[in-house]
Image 1 (tube, rainbow, N blue to C red):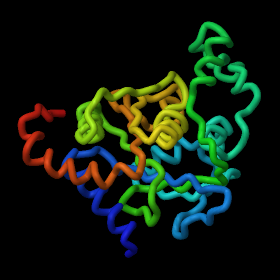
Image 2 (cartoon, rainbow, N blue to C red):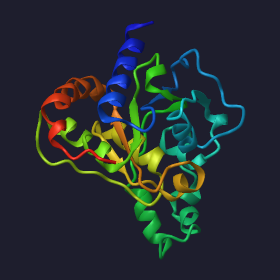
Image 3 (cartoon, one colour):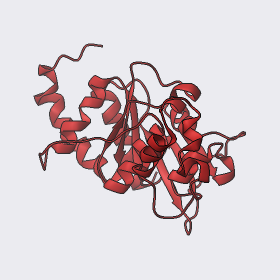
Length: 237
């Protein structure tokens, strides 16, 4: 086992045991245009949307997904694999879903969404414990009480207020992948219409994406919380 694989396995174990997670933390690698895909991850038998791959990985699935394995061009475009489709950029596509009162309102949402600015050729998505690579982002799905702890974990060293950005669409591709990768900060999503239609995201669950580079320090701080802080908190549920 490589050192990065061992570190990922130990981090996953710490998060699961201390937070009591419902499912696996999910490691995501955005494979750059000039990189090779990590070995040991199968291509799915049928196309999946990016959000489906993430939600299936939290239950143990592993995927290597070049562009032609991605079913959703919207998600693929915001994580750097292709240009944003014209009708998505104008707001026309999402307007047909019925959540906004005008195309202009949708366009404003799209214009403010984070987008991966480097060129990618695919994704690798798997449980963090099975990742033999350094994740660009680690995604956690759980109830608010468990997601809450990432807020102090992030702010413990530098302090300040923690802010999040989200929208009614693109929870997986924008909110918890492109946004944390681009900003270097964790970002929370309450889910989106697509995730709630196509995945098993539960009504009581939130999603957070954490930049992979923050994970080691969070694990160290979490170990301290385990004995010094968490016993004082109401952790029922």
